[in-house]
Length: 110
Image 1: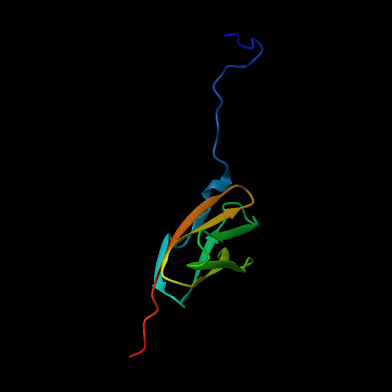
Image 2 (image 1 turned 60 degrees about the vertical axis):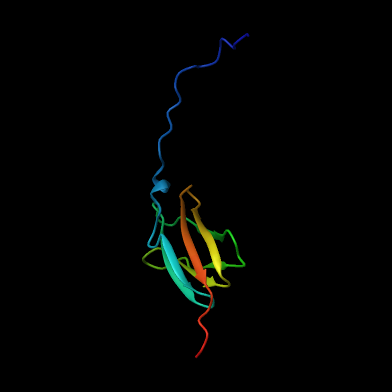
């Protein structure tokens, strides 16, 4: 086997960026179908654009409600049908966090 003699074989060091410090105020939530829940995502870098996606929109959907909330970005989760979904929140600077949402059947009126 022939190797490129011009290649730099020194170890490559990766450092975490400040964006990796993004936090969510909630790691998991359980509620009935039809419920609405709000959570905050605080970017490590002020002013970073935040986005969120649901792993299963038939179970729960998520939308950015207020990007300029003084506490962070405010998101709204709507519980659709029984099941479990992961909410993935990302920041433009590379931060990633997840939240688990468990939706139970809506309670029936007596």
